[in-house]
Image (cartoon, chains in turn purple, cyan):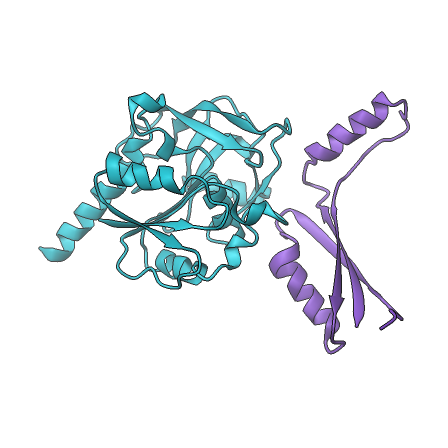
Length: 83
Length: 228
């Protein structure tokens, strides 16, 4: 069993109104040094196969988890997850 | 003309769409559940608004892989009229039948009110009964209707006259004020405003009815050509 962590973020070119609202709230709290906030998604998968695992994760991300018109994705495969 | 209204778990404008076709257009209409796999015998396909699969992950992202979608894609390839409204538009984007994607509304608010649209192209099978440049009042009801596409796609949409409706006062930050776009072939229209909620004066506007009447006119004309 492998644990996979997938991070999905809006592309640089895409405006993030949610992130802007949260940045505004941080400024309101007095944290003027916060220059930018971008909100994304974090998804954990457990995959019961190591065979072609990178190809599988990429396919899952591109078909379903990320909309590549507006989003980028990256992932990490956690080693040594207890069975 | 026989029309299918696709119903997903979480659709909530399927009854409005059904009513618009049955009572507004006075044509035969069926609900087709998302688990079905065939759309044989239908002349037009409507993908209604709502929150299919709770909008989990992204609006339309899960509905796009439901059992009925290969039949929708095949109907698009066969040239049948396909209308996606609101969540239906989002599903068509996720399915790649139309270009671009939807972002959260610029003001972050869910917007539910009548808006004025400008008819940009009245040469499509969905808009032939409108005048070019006409202003029509149609309600919107969405939280993610901020249409986004890259600059190259936007140039292409504009050059090919594929922006059918624009907002007169952009409510959501949508690129180039886009409210509705059509595919290259001209048989798949996606729009955020709800024409099915504007089919009679009692609903606040009857401006949406002509969209459905345009589809029927097209069907009658193409049917007449085939049988004569």
